[in-house]
Length: 630
Image (tube, rainbow, N blue to C red; front, side, top):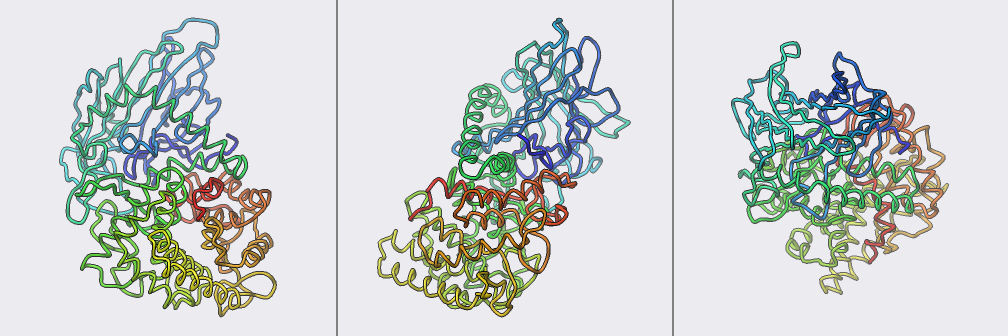
């Protein structure tokens, strides 16, 4: 992999259980939570009595890092000290069609060494994890540690003395309830207080045998995962009563099988992505996958249905946000559409309750991890995104129905969807002064791209009507969408082949990413020549790191950039369009998990990091698959 990742994923399970290396060398930077706050973990190897550091940051001799590679499920480092070569492979088996394994909060570090000097050596490895993994900030409370056994696997357990499960929500917060476990098959575990660091550590130690794998298992039992409309719910992995110790033991036993599955899937993703969009495109997808999955929590509602709750990481911490789910869906439609339904269930539950007073879709369903109803804008009308969220939900429901060839989920919410499409027909052709998903740019009246979303929302309702056998309504809504599109083309034209940011702002520009579904569906709601003319003019707007979102600022969005590029007909043009995004990730000085909002001149990121929306990068792969054709 030639891409120098802005940050390297190590342990990626959910928004709380998340460990990253924010630099090029694993043993030169502190292991951090995705927020950048330290979640200190240290790893050392002792070779013939000489101890050296391979993970984390502290004052001791270091092994030389030779390389680092990233694929869909693993980050693999190679080190040497002149006597041995050490491979440290971090794997999180987030396999989309195995939801129980995906949700299981156990991640692997596999260590393997080979002599490189022809000699025999005595080698041991030690991994130590700090109290920072079980609290918001070190020293917030005291911790308790003990040694337990997972069917014979020694495990060190650590948690806060005072447990307040699901006691608060927020954005820049770490978990402060539940228990961290470090399991070491065939090894030994312990705990100790480091006065210099003013922290308690749990440690695992094991002897290494040349060319054989030694596992260290990182696990976290949050006890209860979410508050869901007043009830505490568990994740998928433990909803049937499975204990964390059973989960650790099962994970150890299944490592080889899961690793083979992960390797095969990672190779398939890379090759398919190369065919769809080139090598640089494939590298970005390989890096994005674990981040996108692990910025969600996978749980079950009271009826046993999957709920897949996103966190708006460094955006405001909202949970199940519709306009965060919408850009992420290409990845999940490609791998398992059930996750998209899991994103929508809390929104439908809230919108169909007496608590929601409006005739359009809500923005969110809470603030992570408390999913009790919208918090964004305190339910004030001026803070809502009516056209945005109605269009998003209609597209999400429809794409799921197409991917599964089954519209029964839509049918179960038909009255709500009908209300939302009526809103789009009445207000979406020329939207009033309201927010859209690009809300950091503020309110905008007559938003041309938002109008496209309304058009596609109406078209999606027509597609659902056809799938459900309502042919008259299908024809009516598809015709309405085409009439809206023809009107759009007349009113949005700049006269030079490009199309405006807003209908009343001649000479302006913006990405028209919402039209991508028309191409994927093959519905031709918009005249093909209109979309091709628009996107071909974008190249003249490029800065060093890509196309700005619109003419108001120099920043762009990674998801929308790839969606817009997917409108292009020529593969070489697609690669030309997305190459600046690869360059931005490769060269930015901001060492954070993949951002989706950055400056096209400097590659500096604008606060957002580790967000689920980079699932949107998969849209070209989704198009290539043909899954969305109707």
